[in-house]
Amino acid sequence: MQYDLIVIGSGPGGYVAAIRAAQLGMKTAIIEKYNTLGGTCLNVGCIPSKALLDSSEHYHNAVERFAEHGIETSGVKVNMQQMIRRKNEVVEQTCKGVEFLMKKNKIDVYTGLGSFVTRNKIKIQSAEGEKEIEGKNIIIATGSKPIVPAIFNYDKKRVITSTEALNIQEVPKKMVIVGGGVIGLELGSVFARLGTSVDVVEYMDRILPTMDADCGKELMRSMKKLGVNFYLRHSVTGVKSTKTSCTVTVQKRDSDEQFDIKADYCLVAIGRRPYTEGLNSRSHRCCHG
Image (tube, rainbow, N blue to C red):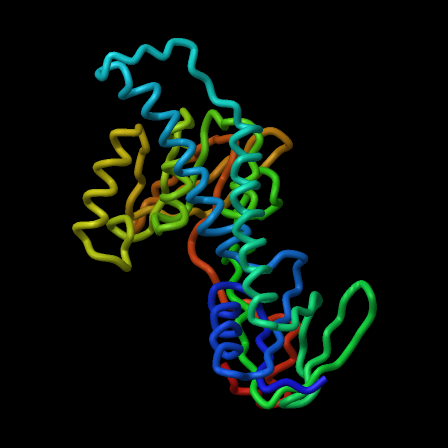
């Protein structure tokens, strides 16, 4: 099959590019390795985290703020399983919206792992086998994955990333979040509102270190009101986990001082890296995208 444009990856970068190309009259295909479209943002990123933020805010308001309005809410409790189900429904609805846009704009969707055979020929590997398609132009929009150095002993059970945090079935008693960036603080806010004791470990001297300093100050003030504890200028030197808990060893920057924090979960949120495994693009000097 010959296309004017092939897009590898169906996240916001990929599917928006595919739609615009199709609107401009290009014969377009999009390749996605997972069974649902939308990439990290729609499936395990922006959309599900905002759904949980919304739900946790409702609970927090019911517990902390309704009384001042004369609304008594004794016996309010969190049903985490239902909260996760509602989040999954939001994700499903959003992903189906992307599927509809693909059909509406007559974009061919291929499910499987796309890799370069030549500069303009793409092989798609799926459970049904392999096929090849060709495109005059290729856009690489394969997104990113969480950075998890070996020192964290990432096991996806007690040492987790944002992906696993979005499916925790019970409210943890305590959680350590490594990284004071947007992702860690967003999920920290969710669990702090639900009653989890949250500790944030950040190597820099402020949270949101890549953003405006005033934003960081305001957010820290807000999160401290939720009971979140911050260890600024600290790094993690090791993480050990069991079936039911984990122990995070923390060291103060420019010091030999170390101490352990025991928690139900250690959420690693120190950044993300480009996800290019399996593309086989370097050997063909592919520079599209």
